[in-house]
Length: 130
Image (cartoon, rainbow, N blue to C red; front, side):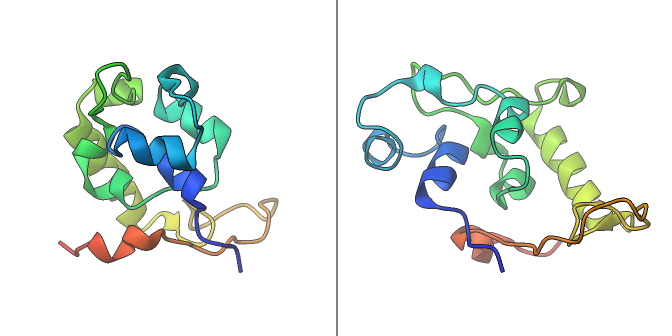
């Protein structure tokens, strides 16, 4: 079984929403907002096999509370609309074509690697069914 996200990883994912003091304690002791991934694309290049529940439920997760750190850029198809991204992202997760242990198509080709366990961060309790 894989380990849950580390405090470092979770802090980077939620950098736009976490207080600066927590980021300084968990990520780096010197404030460098340009060192955090600027977009979801960069974030997933950094760690492609993880996703936090907030990216399926909370449009504010992408909005920065830090004046010197821009909002997390969304994919172009979302048109800069976090609510649209959340709705599409969640629909893909909950759709019949997604295999939760692989994160890909339910009818995956045989060439795919073995399934990975689905691991949620400590914030999983905040997910509510619709």
